[in-house]
Structures are given as C-alpha cells and as structure tokens.
Length: 499
Ligand SMILES: [Zn+2]
Image (cartoon, rainbow, N blue to C red):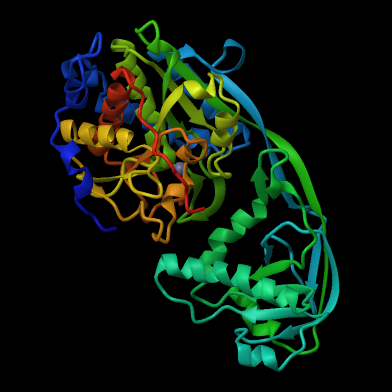
C-alpha cells in the first residue's frame, strides 16, 4: 500500500498540541488539560493478553449467528464488567439481541449436467440463492466473447462460459471474475438463457476455493431487508477448474431443481458506558465502535480450519477494553459509549441494527470512532478512513484525530485507501458506515489489509502489539478530546457518499 504524509490542507491542525484547539476558543468552563487524560492506563500487556484469549481456537472464529459468537460475546461482557463499565444494552444488561435472516439454497436442491451429478457446495456452487427449475440443453460458448456468442442462439438454453484471460494481480482479478458474474450473466439472461455456468480456469481456482465457502453459507441480512427477498432469476452456477475438461462436450442437458430456504438466527451487540462528569454533557456520548465476530470454521489452509481473526477484529476488541480502563481511571465530561457489534462480517448487521435502534437517543451520539484491523503492516503507518471527501462527514472530528495523532503516536497516514477510486472500497466495509449514513460524525482507525486477511493465518502471534497499543492510544486521545470539548464535532454540510 502506498504511504503518504498527511493531507496538506489539514496541516494547520497537525502542529497543534493536544487540547490546543480548545484553548484557542473563548475559555469554556472546566476545560480539561491535556495532562488530565489517563493514557497510561492503556497497556500493551493487557491488550496482548486480551487479544490472545479472544483470538484463541477456543472461540472457533466467532462466526456471526453461531454459538461461537455468543460464547465470545459473553466472555467479552465479563471482561467489560471487570473494567468497571456499566451495562448499556437492553434491560440493564450488556447485551442487545437482534435476529439475522439467513437465506440459502436448501440441501435438497439438485443439479446435473450430462452424466455429472453436481453435489452442490462440493462440486459447484450457485452464486445467489434462487428458486429455479431448469431442464435445458447446455451450450458452450468458450470465453463468451462477442464473436463466440454471435454463433449461438442462447434462448432457452443453459450457457457455459470459461473464465480466462483475467488480469493477474489479486484485486483486479477478483473484480474481473465477479464483474463477469454480474455483467455477463445478466446479459445472457436478457438474451433468454435459462441458466449460466461459469467454469474456473487454473488461476481462478484459488478464488473459487475461497468464495465457494462464502456462497455456500448463503446470504445474511436483518429481517425484512431488501436482500432477503428471494427472486427467481436464472441460476448462476460456478464450477471448479476440473470441470473444464468435460463441460464443453456437445449434447449435454442441464437439469436443476433449486429451492431456497430462509430462517432466523440470534446475534448480539455488546454495549457498555462510562458516564460523563459534566451535568449537561454527560447526556451526550462519544461512541467507540468495533466488531467481535469473524469467519468461524471453514476451508482449511495448511491444516488449520479456524479463522481466528486476530487482526480482524480481536485488535479492535482488545483496544476498546483498554480504552475502557482509561475512561474508568479518568472519566471525561461527556459519557463514553462502547459498542461491540455482532455479525459485521455477515454485512455490517450489528451496526446497522444498533444505529437504527440505539440504546441511547440517536441524537445524543456526537461521534463514532470505529476500530477495524489495527495491528498489522508497517509499525509507523496507519489510515484514518472518513478523512477525505466524499467520505469526510466532519472535518472538525478529523482535525481532532489528526491532532491526537501528532500528540501521540505520529503515524504516517495513508490517504489512498480513503479515495472513492480505490478498488477495495475500504470505507464501505466496516461499522462506522451505518452511522455515517445517518449523518453522525464517524471515522475508522485501521492498519489496512494484509496477505493473511480472512485466512486462518490471521493469528495473534502475527500482531504488532506495540503498534496496536499506539493505535489504541490514538483512538483514546481522539475520543478524550471529543468527550471534553464543550462543542460537539461539527457536521459537514452537504455530506453525501458516492454510493
Ligand atoms: Zn473486520
């Protein structure tokens, strides 16, 4: 990733010592001094101990909507209680329960091509749950070029397309393959195809191995969300590279009976607070956000099937525990609210639910500071998402975060990953997003992607604990400034995300 120095347009804020922005204003009552914080309560040894416990095999990867997520959440609530934070969930507990709607292909679904019985989720996957009954001749169109498609009438047929010729770097490759699924499948369906079969080539086999386990799980959403609606569109089937040898044979029939099933699971947010010290400002909250779930148990890599998610996102979980200890030692004028959001990996579901059903009045949340993957990559680099337009929804908040960075760890901040042109779309992939969409000032602290992302190799021993401690202190110092300044962070007028 490209490391850049801080934005020059914000440079004025960088030279300010912590608290200086407050000092330049007419003196507010009870202004805390920079030395009044409890940053010393944030200790690397605590963070390391908590992270090793949460990202241990005992919790089996904390998959959203499973008992493993619930078990990890109960453990976290016990740690939170030990910090002295008060419960702020439902009914005087640390928990806010919500339901996930899961929609997937029923196990009774069948698929056959010629003489090949395709065991779904073993020999092939259907990329979106769909109710479909297909009995049609299969026509092979090579790589699906315009010239090849011109030779065949696809109407009423199942169409097989060989994936080939994709760009070779990881990000472009994934975008190419999924773009093909979305674009070419839609085109073929429009032309009358009744099913579309994509066949991996050797380079796309690794992508198949990873993503077939994601498709197998189906779709997750909050009940009633648009994505739970099942539509009966021509099925899009994805086969491994081993099918290349036989799928092109002429005269094969494709028969499929696909049935969708949909049901609900419980998931949970964990919510705690440290009340503020100011009679008025304590009614407002600085929200520290993270997610406790990860990817559970799935395809083994090098013999390990437990996706422990040490960086993603035990780092955020351990960081928030450390920040709680600091707020317990020295409360701020505003209240601090801590929200661990469940089922983030299933589509930001806990944060979508909490932001719509907060356990404190929505208007009382003055800022959201979100911790997402904070312990990898170069020790002196990090990123602050939500710091540049169109993701910037409070330059006031960002200035405080940049000042806190200068007063604390002095990370070199990447600015590439916050750009709307960045292929990863990182800004849209964590729990600050639902709050930002509501107009609440929101930023995300992250040390960005790495090769072990969403693999069993995202393990506690690969975390840079000194860096994670610095990230935690940076978040804390920002929150401390926000919680003590009389005026809440100003909101950017006309804020509008690109999607
Ligand atoms: Zn994450």
